[in-house]
Amino acid sequence: MKTNSKLEKILASGNLAVTSECGPPRGAVPEKIIEKGKLLEGAVDAVNVTDNQTAMVRMSSFAASVFLRQLGMSPVLQMVTRDRNRLAMQSDILGAYAHGIDTMLCLSGDHPCFGDHPAAANVHDIDSIQFIQMVRAMRDEGKFQGGADIDNPPKMFIGAAANPFADPFELRVRRLAKKVAAGVDFIQTQCIYNIDKFEQWMEGVCKRGLHEKAYILAGVTPMKSAGMARYMKNKVPGMDVPDTVVKRMADTPKEKQPEEGIQICIETIERLKGVEGVAGFHIMAIEWESRVPEIVERAGLSPRPQVD
Amino acid sequence: MITAERKPLEELIEYIRPFDRILLVGCNECVTVCAAGGRKEVGLLASSLQMASLKSGKPLDIKEMTLERQCDPEYVEELLPVIDGVDAVMSMACGCGVQEVARRFKNMPVFPALNTTFMGASERQGVWAERCRGCGDCLLGITGGICPIVRCSKQLLNGPCGGSSTGKCEVNPEIDCAWQLIWDRLKALGMEDRYEEIMPAKDWRTDRGSGPRKILREDLAE
Image (cartoon, rainbow over all chains, first blue to last red):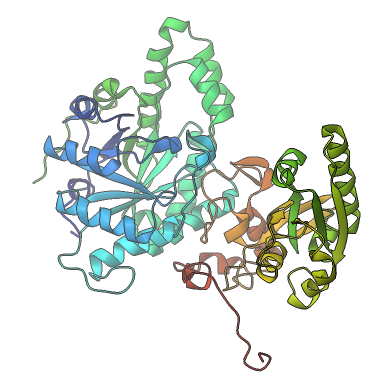
């Protein structure tokens, strides 16, 4: 075991892992993150806490993660290279680890042009792959990126994202290979609606044995409405929602669409369970955390295994 | 070359409102090529300012001059014979030229007529695009001749983000995805394997990380 991360222990045990996420509130309201955390408590193994997602200011991932940790949960600290240079990132990693946060996700982050501070500067001192290298060296070599020794190095279980649906497709397995070479331990993918394309990507991943070097968690997001399906298809960068999925949502009466969205999500998980190399699921129920336990249950993923 | 665009006329009028005699100084280098601050643009701006002054009823004396290179002290010196006859200078050079004039004539107000934008190349008639940031440690030799620092919206050094779609950047469909371009070039050159070499975190000291930069050539410096 590289770390004390609950997620690592569950993945290492061979069980399918289940993670979910919650977005911190747009204000200094701890009750909201605690409320969201409680909706997910026990239903999943670890909960990602997003870092100013969609480039909108929210309570910091670090602070919100501490609230979840205080509930006895396992937060996954998300961190983007957009807002911080390497000094700020490393100091937050030390702080988070000191608060018992041992799992993180290294991302580049949504561009500020999509958020509510489009005039902000982009930092991008390092990129997501260099970020993985940095956290791995902090853990395994006990060194800061600048080369100095760390007193009690943070033992982070290191995650990253992968989007099998972005272009150029032929680079997508290669890009994952770079993340693996940089030292990533687990991957959470972009939301999967185009299962055929995902399978094609996984085939390439397995052919290179990358699934044996990093755990691949398949990302799913239940859709609440046909409108959301269309929005994700047309407006969200890097999202691949096939017409058949949009049509299935649109052909469902409006009041039954949320149930249909959940049903599609469960069917997706069921099918992905049979895909070689899938080590678990990352259920991103956007502002819909209340339905996650049911999805986990109906997808045959509960109860969650206990590890110490 | 260094590219620039002229500031809005209203902003320029506001700068020179307190003054009666203006020297408008163009530059014969980059800003002439990108049609922002050469002899022709100096003439056009002088006419516009003159029209505005006529409309407002306040007389304005405008002298025009275009230097060979406004970022070079040798040429800036050519302003000496005319500078005493004016109250302020409006420079139509890039920021380097503006600063050089201000440095030479310490008691003379100097205003920029342009917004200096980037180091770029001409894509076609009337279109210029950013190509270089002057990071001080050129990576083009390993990225197929396309700069990810300045041409990727997220400055990613190790490949395309999840927002690259049909060759375009998620930020704006007008922007080519730099990593799609790099990948296409590496393939054309038969250098696909190079993609998987991890580019380490960049040392920004050669960029702006060590403060304002200077080049000292011992063999040339006097």
